[in-house]
Length: 213
Image 1 (cartoon, helix red, strand yellow):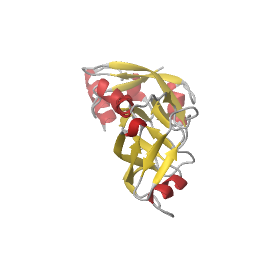
Image 2: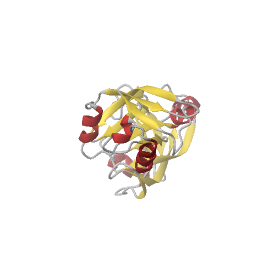
Image 3: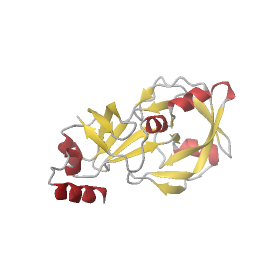
Image 4: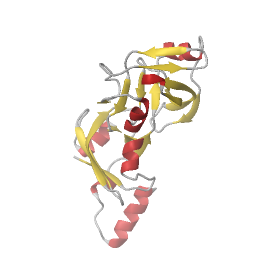
């Protein structure tokens, strides 16, 4: 809808459409709050044998959801975050994604990593209603990234794992210089930044953002 409105406005003013408005798919920039991804074995340790995650809210990416289940994260010096949301479906590794302020509050020194790149990262203890699960590694701050399909990649002239920039307009305008591109036919065009980054740029639902090479 936003794309159609912008097209009409620019047409009436006799102005050329900005490059982002001509893209094959509309860009969505979302704030990804702290969460965790778990294996089925971890889910069963925390919630009981045979337990299956229950979708509570479907996310923008196809097949992804925020589960009804949440856990308590126990960090260094027994500091905790309760109600850490689990995102499903289950994966083949365990990973916790926190914002920088979360890490400070817990006493973590976490690196910025792409999802799945957990080697050498801190671990933590998770607590659920059935028991505990120890992560030896897997606590990260997620690298800002953009999901896109091959037609999006062709339009922006990028490939998987290339680096782009995200230009955020508005009163707190800023540019994220190291946005990692992730390309897959199943993806929808979507940027993920964390809560600290979203707050820093004052991101709102109507904030105009554009991808720049």
